[in-house]
Image 1 (cartoon, rainbow, N blue to C red):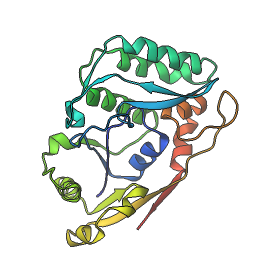
Image 2: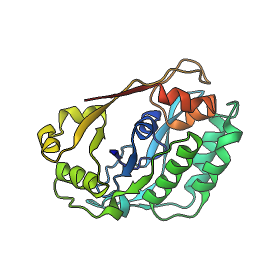
Image 3: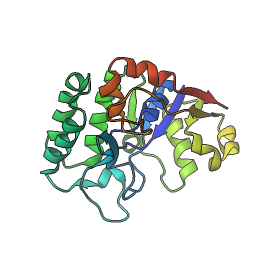
Image 4: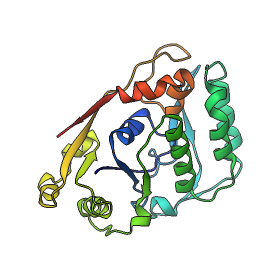
Length: 230
């Protein structure tokens, strides 16, 4: 079994879903420290004025973990949803995919993690991501050392291989994985270029941009973003 692990980011970029498609199981790493002003509570869309941040306001006190962070303001969905609808009013697939995502955003929810996971699962369904999703918090492993954490999470699912992001080459201890009998692979991915609204192409946006512009073709585009290598 090939396992991949990723934080439950807010409406992630297409590379997140590419990684999911490559794996036999996805673990959402919700037991690490929340990082302020990163991808856990925000992402970018494309507007007529260029890239724009969508941000979920949170209640956070250092060193809370992702699964401990709350949503701060119940009024935020109206503004955020308005921004999306204005930016993608002419997108061919807005009306196909946006209503269920908008419903998730407007559903009363105290937990950032829970909302992000609901959005990820919904988008994964649109893209036909097949691998089952697990929460790190439910697997209850030792969180003291980053490498040990990954190894123990893989062990919980009886994995024999682990798929890391490209950046993992810089910090993962390959020998530790070998000692556990885990094959180590790295995602190889190139950001897709596709037809967008509003002028010149902008890369590394939220999955919303690809989904609203390409619709069913988005899944094929993501699958063709790359592969993996040892």
